[in-house]
Length: 443
Image (cartoon, rainbow, N blue to C red; front, side):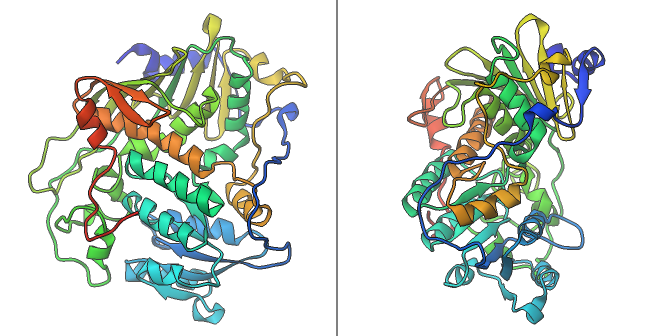
């Protein structure tokens, strides 16, 4: 892997660059005005929420609970129902929101929660392999949706979710919360307005994956409905390292760091490139993946990787498991802007501190990802990480994983038709856009 994307290379640049933790005053917020019509919830009306896929409140994987805590902290939001197939997590989460004292109902089957006519919106915090099915059913039931990232497990699911969301006029927020961080918005706004001159390259530095297993097969815990947890995924023996936060290291349920952190940093890369409704035209990959385990009891997703995407204008985006976590935009004459959680830096401080002209392109502003979702439920505006943005961003992640799973090489992609159009493995690649759901589940 080239020195330009190693930790050493990045830190060498950082020592000669300029970094800051806040955005300059000139880059402060402007309001979003694009709206879409649907039902009206008045400013004093309660928004009644359900949580599907809670996670635990006492350690372990708990993104769904965290999201609902953030959303329920917004004015006028009430949590009325929670759902989880881990009965311990279900009980803990119901108690967080008041339990029976506040009428918080508990479900182990999300379909019963969606049947309730008094629920306006849901948070989906399940493992990734459930996202598309739950989201599609929620939208068809007339609910607005906050769905954790990555929005889907496979390429084809996102295209269908976009269709359903537009038909149902759903407010759909994808949980890629970096869009609601001033530093990431500033970096993308500067890049889109030519602050680096001609953009040459973007590097998204993601964490490396894990290579572990085979794990010990155990009896299913009494408090876990394991068959429902597996749902549409292939049936596999129970190992404790398969569920909760570890699900992301198995292709049956997720896509490893390519879709976990990739759904954050490749989303920001697309935003900076101005490609929210588009994608690359070519992808190639080099990766180290775990050895195949015929017992299906070892992690399967990529451990180390370097995926290169080429866009129609020739700009390259690299997703690498090396380097300091964040996104690096490279322009002309050695100029660069780097952004990560908590800081933004540049090769020259003036790249960040000099204000953009009055006629510069302004990007959507959100000061709170959860607050933006609630505001959009009331106004019917599209949220900052709308369903199509979530789909297009995770599609970049999925393209990399398809290439990795086929052993690397080069694949050609048509972002308008959303299909592979060239390369020796075109047919195999297109087949990986979808998979056959187990147990009769469908979109």
